[in-house]
Image 1 (cartoon, rainbow, N blue to C red):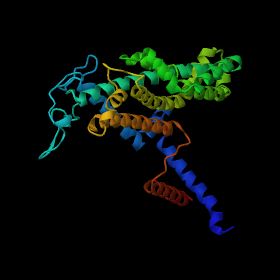
Image 2 (cartoon, one colour; image 1 turned 30 degrees about the horizontal axis):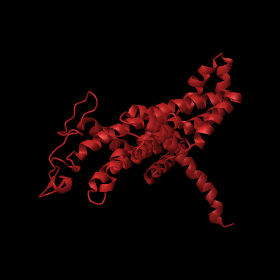
Image 3 (cartoon, one colour; image 1 turned 90 degrees about the horizontal axis):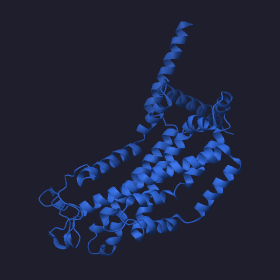
Image 4 (cartoon, rainbow, N blue to C red; image 1 turned 45 degrees about the vertical axis):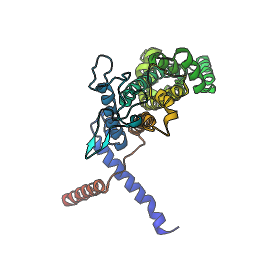
Amino acid sequence: MSNSTANNGPQDALGESVENAIELKEVEGLSQGRIVLRRFLRHRGAMASVIVLASLVLLVTTSIGWGPIPGWWQHGFRDLNPVLNPAGAPTMGFDGGFTIGTHPFGQDNIGRDVFAMVMRGTQQSLTVMVVIGFVATVIGVLLGALSGFFRGWTDNVLMRFTDMIITIPVIMIGAILGILVGGADPWSLALALSLVTWTTMARLVRAQFLALREQEFVDAARVAGASNARIMFKHILPNAVGVIIVNATLLMASAILLETALSFLGFGIRPPEVSLGQLINEYQAAFATRPWLFWWPGAFIVTIALCVNFIGDGLRDAFDPRQRRIPTKRALAKADAKAIKKAAKSLAGV
């Protein structure tokens, strides 16, 4: 074995100790929540996604109005207007300078404003995404917690039921539920889809509870006389919140794709209501002649899904203590200078 290979061990150990010292110095005196927030804010992809998603939600909320919030856009998603450009081409473009025009995303063949329809479709798709993410997370956490904590016959019954739901294709169950409760009500569709999208969350939470219930703090809580419910939701659940939050974001990303697929197939939200998948389904035949009718709903679907996935990736890195930020050369040089200065002081004292 060469000398360079033999020296790699001490060098690696020294580098790791420097990295640990830098990281410990940075988080000294901070709570666990502040440490997680600090790591998340340093994740560039996640922060960029938060900004993009927040801007998109702000645009969707304020443009055509949402609930009690009035909109500033001049056209409604059901309004019929005279077709301005040939075939309803977008008015946004460069004409002696960048201009937005009256219909920046274009119009369909009967004069409806595509921008207003995309904004309304995004509202409905976001509603379905958030409702599915919340309801499915609650169901998955509850069933997973009960299964992992009590084990025995409770675990067998709940996990066999979960396995049965997993074996049936989600798209098929969603299509059946979409026919029954879809139509023009995104809330009913979201609640129905929540009943089949909680399985992954339940299995992950079960695995966390199986591991955490054997820890010493659980035994201490039992000795102190804490009830099972208090141990589950006061002691174990906070220690599993990282896994829950991360997978909730991934669940929301898959939920909007599921709603889009169902609406595209005609089993989800249907006219007179609008969703992004339903817009793609309605205008798929016009892709060759009027591609702007297809581009904009697809662009918003991809943007939302990517943003939610990047946010979930940032949360995973923030909650995972094994994920370490690689120190920069400047940080390493600063740490070396401090170590040399400290050694010089100790020698001077001697």
